[in-house]
Length: 177
Length: 376
Image (cartoon, rainbow over all chains, first blue to last red; front, top):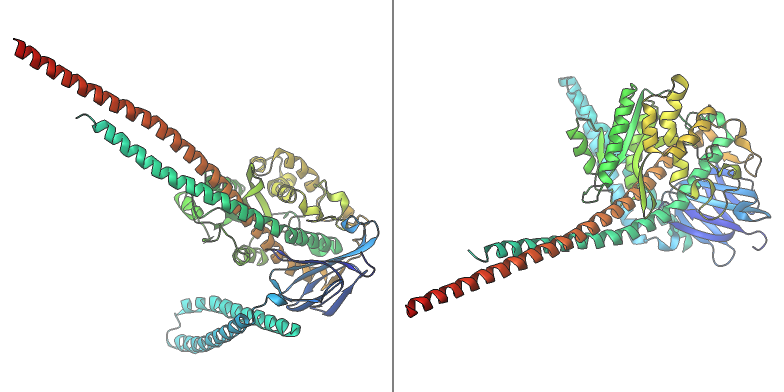
């Protein structure tokens, strides 16, 4: 392996998204931006949703939309059976896609749908809140109504997550272009 | 009436022939699905191994923080049991053996005074437990044959919540492990607290996490099914009963769930007591890994992801086992149909021959009688 290069693999539960030799990988963790080069100290960190760039030894840099995950950097002797000191980087992500595979039109559609859904849910939540107060003032026995809230919250959270995903995709697809 | 029996037999043969067409088709479909399931299983392997590696590293980084989320629970009042079966039947013993093992586990836990909350995947489970008056808290359907990551997440969220809320002390999963094309076995494994793949029980441990070498990656890899799950599978009964009393009826299931070989490994596991102490930091490149954010935060966020990964793996292996079992069952059914057809055809031919013979005898008899009448 040439100097300054190390192995990077990006893994998702469904596939090995990328496995290549690279000079650098740039990503963002919850503590801030992070660039991993050869010989980086061993670290385990989370990866916040966004663009991840891998500068390959050969060919253009690869951009990926990663929707949250974890990164492990291993540096030491005997990694991958190699005698010399070497570095291996593993990025685990539940959902991730290569920038070139992102369907911009679909992501835009998803974003619009998610936005609409969020507004709809917020409006519904506002109504339900008002109705809840009215009901409490009137009868006070309508405790059962409260049970409807958690699934709606869940739906809202899901819609927001979908929106975030769509935005990450669009951002990454844009960064490449 | 002559020919009546023959016609009845012909009808039966025809019906068996059409059944055979169906079973043969199902066999072929199952066979093609096996390949797909195995591909997905293989594709999932590196992710799962990577996840296991991170958990091991994190546990080493801060054993105290890891204690809550790793190892065997010291005391159990309530336990979540997740059973993974299929939506469809006609797959030989696949559903039945998994469900029976679940039932045994539930009975066993109840006998120890532990309350059980049962979650299931697959349409076959709720009806089985309804008949046996065992309450199912939540059942998932329409996902067992081609489980998606989203499906696994939904299931994981449901079973993780009670644990994180502190309502239960342990989450167990009963599912069929795909060891090889010829061998699948029901196994009980612990989802939460996270099992310790790097624990002394495993022969691969001396290699420590720094060097989990090559390809699919170290600790969790080589037999990606048996090894990592074996330890905790036993811990489920071995550890909690061990300290208090001697062997209890509980140990029985351990033998069912794991194997005799695993039972042996339980001893060092339980004996070591507190999770991840002492020998954890065998010098290697590991030891000085940094964590961002700190281990405790990281682990608490990582744990649900690790459970998702384990459930996804269990579902994929379950699907592969299901299709394997179905293919085998349908092949047997087709063979049996062949044999039935052969036997029935033979009986039918004999019946036809009998009918013809009888007819000839009647004609000859009639002609003879006429001749005698003329001659007289």
